[in-house]
Image (cartoon, rainbow, N blue to C red; front, top):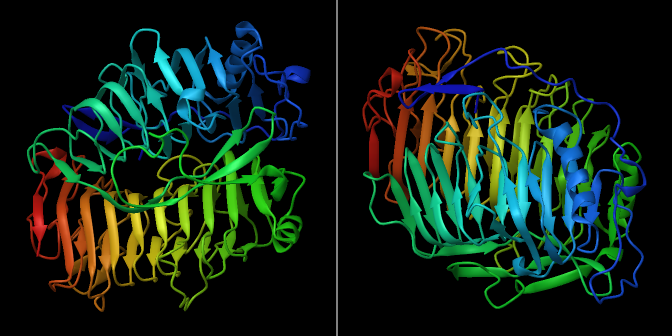
Length: 594
């Protein structure tokens, strides 16, 4: 998404937003930065792990004023740091806390208990609009996971847009996904319980997976509910609700936890099939716990691709602490069941045109909590899951990606032919934002060049929460059979300079956002919203979705929207659906195709 405003419900571009100069060294708060003490009545016998200077670990025995001071210092740095270099994780050991937690850019707030009830925040946890006039359309890259909140005023404000993680939460009250009705463009909620109502307000689109709540109100263009208890009443297209009763197959995101003796581990949830509601109703989420001693704890500025690969080759799992990892080589994840977990939006930035990370074609790999940021020399891909030509089947123990994000430009000049390539069969993607930047540093049609956001070559790949935006050709290219997508949000590129330079075939204007290859015989997608925001006159897109017309390729609920005064999307799917018109005067909707 862009730095945006909306008139009469219409999102348009705004310019010249001030951006903080990125810092080049980690912020240190002195000896109280990482706080370790005692649980009430529990001795912490284990030595505290060294998570580095940008991880704050709080205990309930620490005075609330001291905890609040550290939270405020982090937020002062991160509140407006849309493209800054700092990264933070705030970890809360089990217990109760009376604090106010504003969550800024590249900040992850984590409860370390086995279940959300183990950590209870009495006060406030909130995401506030970054832009003026309550505009939250640039509220990216922030996360809350694994704790409960009793909001002091009864309502928790979570005004957010893309690359937002809201997981394993229990809210004793209501939630609003906007700030005072201001504009917002998210978002994601999963494995969470809200006792009261969730008010979506101005949210243009949203996906909720395996959530439970007292109620949901609001709709705009594309709201998707998968495996949700008590989904809202109403059916597509009015309101634009897409409801899938049960989640076919998913593994929840792994998470850091601590036991009563202070031993840290990473919980890897078990695979769930045909699921409904949260995973932790019976207490902790079913799965296995891996002691932290089996992880290599990497540090930005100290570790290289070579040092990390050496540890992975020894059989270690990988925990990436907050910061930016400048990589002159490729990280290679080769052993089955390896877990790679990032804290605080740990960022991998490749140099010299290398691929930042590749995986082998093996069972059970889990990649979570990572931001891939393209370097100035073009990479063929930023992450490649399985080598080209992968053949193994992984249905019983799939590879899974959770909150894995991609960026080309914005913080600095970046280039990549594709951001994410999935070659391995049976892979699960559980929330991703794949973004060619439309604002920030190093942005322009000939600057942050990137053809495709996602290329899927594997069979039976399942994706929940697929956000792909602004790439210069197809946003998504799907070559494998048996693919399933639950929720798709895409803005096509803003900046094609003219129609001749934005033509995919004779008589075809532009590149479809979502391309299913001609040879694919089985594919399904639910809840797709595709938007155009052409900055230059005389540029249009022939179709939003391009797919073979056979009975095995099916789309359920798709909408196109033309935002702003220029251009149009002429059809929704192939030659079906009709055209949008500028300034959201007409939004074609397709219920089913073919």
